[in-house]
Length: 421
Ligand code: HAM
Image: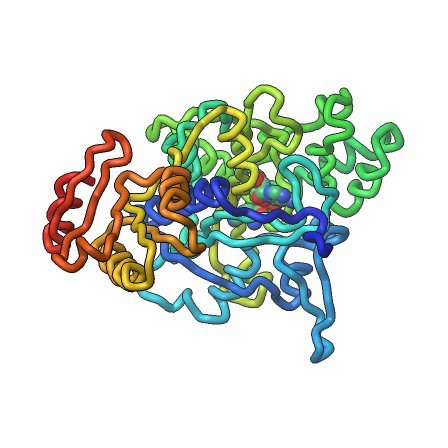
């Protein structure tokens, strides 16, 4: 038997209904806020992620699915959506469009070669948005409000919004230097990963899962103290806007994010549900004002977030939130002989066209078997075809719940269903 690759999942049946439901909510949410859908390739030139996500990030150093295509080009399955969207923004010269900022959303598979565990897989789905072309903190607040509103709509209660600011490049660099000076004399007391991060990416030491409770990390310099005046001003405005939107948040100086491209606003939404496990960050995002120019485009500010849908569904399940009622169908059409079968085919097609969820028999079951099948499918009405009645253009329709049975003309069926379904 051929099995699915490690860290992937098959989604079908009841589970797929949850996905459909969430996808519909996402599309509605984004349409109302005037974000348009973007679909970029699942694979891109490897260089995009090295330059975009950052050479020193965990994602690029150990998690990408890299391959050489048949034309000898180095390619990578996308580990995240932002770099591809920014590549597309530059390639398609979206910066030239008159309706700035450009507001985009995506909902698709990402790939990271990680150790699979609850909430962490190798193929996973991210819903994300990216806004390019404005640095106004108003849009930072809007971008944070979108996942907050979605989680609220879904009824998820156990969430916490953490925000932080890394400041502009000057502030971020000053802070980086302060961290290196602080950690250097005591780096041997931290884990080997942190030791490696000291030169390459000292900010990441702050969100080390292994050393998170060490006093060295707890007492580390806080980025807030290294923000220059304009960065502080900007961060204050964002907080005011979030308060205006009645979004409860916490300023958490440990939020630094694992990708290299961030400056100013960074944020995460975590699930605070009991026993949820360590992979509890449902949403991560932030501002990336230098990414577009680093990828060869014009200087353009940008901000976005991504939400992991598998993690979201885990959180909803853990809180006992039921999105989908037992599936039902409107009508099940039954027949026995070939003449009735032909009418069943036509009638099924007609009723579906009129908007009723309609099923018929495909497996040659006896009439008794068809009643059982209709019951299993939770059909509201059973339509029983019979050659004798069909001669007079009549059919039998039975209400599955009340068991009431009527013989009606085929021409009356639409009106009957309209009244009763
Ligand atoms: P990220 O923090 O790497 O950010 O991922 C965002 C979310 O994707 C996570 O919070 C999590 O819910 C989900 N996720 C990540 N890795 C996995 C995995 N292996 N299995 C299941 N779910 C996962 C980004 O990807 C940025 N591109 C976000 C962004 C957009 N920043 C600005 N714009």
